[in-house]
Figure 1 (cartoon, rainbow, N blue to C red):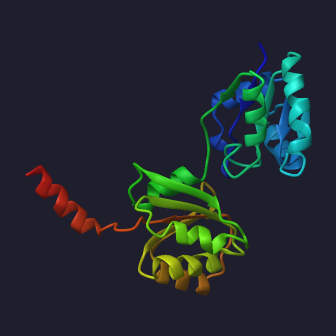
Figure 2: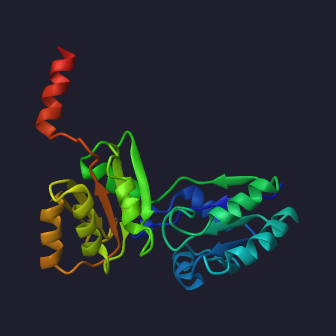
Figure 3: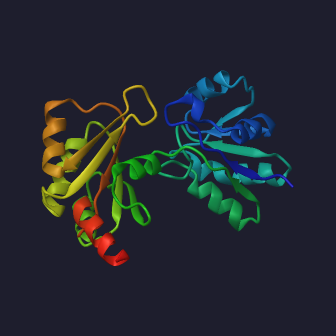
Length: 239
């Protein structure tokens, strides 16, 4: 039976495509792409020639039914986004939900996403975390941050270079300027960088150096103690 494949694509470095992802893209009948121009570059790099259909946040409500019908008719379909895993701050949820409701099998491949590398290299606890993605740009933004004020888990946000300083300033307003943060940009690319420190320190850094690239902000949860204190507690517990 035909199915929908969710296929992650590289977030920067084209070497981060998996062998399984390449095979699936070669075998499906057509590929749904967030931006067909962007995806064409990747497919050309992989020497894959498949029909591309546009599937993005502005047309997904209108196209999900037609896609589901194509799969029901025997067409295997792959969904990709411009970068990373579809559905994670990218189109995909509506199509997956429609397929699930219609009894269509959905197979999701593991692969590239920006939030996990940023979380792991932040130095903050990553056994439990809270993923917020992009905050509302205007209405409800500060309300959502206030709701997270007591969150003890590590918190992950996505942000654009045009709003990252303002976002950090808002985080400092709600969580305090001494809250620790790790800000990663251009992950997997040539100029990949992670800046760590307090919110006040990182704000000062990006005010002195113009932010460029796509950003992942990893904020320490409330009550996170220093590395030294944590180590001392671990030693005491082991003893």
